[in-house]
Image (cartoon, rainbow, N blue to C red; front, top):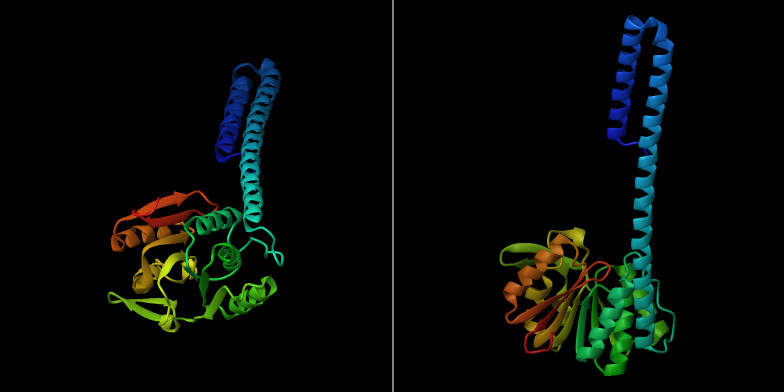
Length: 282
């Protein structure tokens, strides 16, 4: 809508003023009443056209700003994709589209860079998908293994098929772990069934991208307190979707559990928090 509520108020006020002037002209100067009415009508028409022109200019300016933001966003995604594919090298199969629930290109490029920087021997991620493939390809370069927890049976099957297509089954293990009630300090959470992790070696890289945020308040908080017994002394911990308020609160809650950790926020599409032990370079 080009006309704002304020424009409508101005229009109503101008109409009232025009009627008042026309009425006064008819009563006091009847000989000039028609001239006054025509002049007032012309003035009112000009006022409305000026208001409409101003409103059009404001909408055009906002549209240009929106297009500029979108171009900047698209350019970042394209740059991130080029960086990602250059980092991964030759792929055995095309990667799935990074849209919808999948991780975004900028986050994918950051994830690959962190894997190659820290050379983890054991990576654990909550949730599976494109990130599973990217981590698998990076670990093929650096050595190491990935365990992925997936509570959705359809996504679990899709990830298994993707791993076969990409030839990463020897590096990645995806576990179907339905959500179950788990108690932490007297509070019950729905979280992955971790009974299958009893023989898990020490984790030195943890990616938390599940379960979905609307499942419960602070849905991803249980990752650190429940997996702490398997965490290495100086792991790298990544929390996706950090632009959301609850994820920011989760980061603060984790830092109260983890001692001597450095927090760094990355401006990816949905925001990313990376926690590293202060003994490591931040």
